[in-house]
Length: 587
Image (cartoon, rainbow, N blue to C red):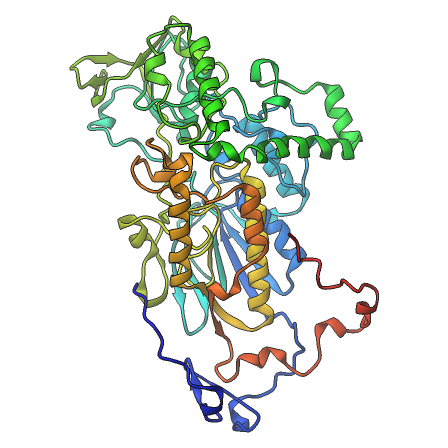
């Protein structure tokens, strides 16, 4: 895609009546009557739309709850490839799986759960919460389970996305269409085995953390775990007491933090179970429960300074965590020099690995830092030539975090987003949308606030932005809307320049840099509050809008009436409050 400059615009007085601008006839007072027919609908009339969301995890459920409450005349459908609702929490069932965000702020604001069992909830409890929310709020009716979207293409003339979907249970191919396509698959969805030669030559059970086989017995076995990201840390901690011999293969150092929102955590920053009395108090005193949630959220939001490499908070965090890790490993332990990073705290996502360092120093645990050469039937062969013999091999190697769609997404001019992002870095306008892909939105896309705390408030604010845009397109008769290339390039340029000062750009391998250490991170250039503020005030001027009407862009003004004056509505509301209409202005 290249940037071209339009010719200079003639003066208003030089435009002939009925002349075309940007391919559309401009109809002034003396224009031909046949060019524009007045609609019989009032201003604000919502034209019928169909919206499809791919994925029935946190994002799809939040959209399912909010869309029918704020938009009218919209059909909503979710296609989910799995057999149940829950997204990544349905797929990840490995031992020790848990959220690294406190449970009471990892929930929908519209569906609080006062009776979380622990400060950090297990994956199973989060899955149960999501499925209970779907049932309680009657969101299941929107979901087609075991339906995998295999292809999506934009029809410019009709202003719709045409989808090809595979029914996983019957093998049937289903066709569908929508005016707005929402990709809610997230970036913790497409798990991958590591690129290690002869990986599948291993004689014993081989598992990925995101495709766990509960039938595999670990007790009394020699178990190897490759990877020390969040899942690797949780698995090692959970299975160390079970294994006869545990070998963990670690390539990169990583900071192990005590806990997020430590002021509210358990002893020494650990997890803890809520007592029945605490849960009853939260349930019976909802204002106090809200106060508790806000206190945890406020503490996390107030630590943004730590993300600046040269800040005092960052320096203090590095000193504190290094001392804590040495203490938990044991003074002068040889692992200290291998595990404690020389990059900034937060360059890689922090994991509150309570018990992890202790598991590494247990008598039945071996930590291997040597590079892996290949997998052999007996186990893992190292570059040194040594073979580590194993009974079970676990790959806790994460996901494809390139944001590349798992299926072809064909936009304007035949551009395939899957191919574009497979061969170059993902790039999106405010992590939400892509030039040349009209009416297509991403949740948690490249450049979002991915290291800023709980993802659920982020998703909720993205939903509000998307709904405002759809409402504008629906009531002002826009057929297509996409961010401009120039606005997207400017946003990416600002993000790159800003993040030079951030910890995310330090010399570490992280998924924000797609596994590389020397490129600009795809992370929002600001705090979470900064992100919320940005989305609260949409820059519609950054978008390119295509009207349904080819005759007159003001066709949506309709018959001269407004939906605000429909029967039974207050048509003198403006006398009640002199500030009416200004509530959105906020500093």
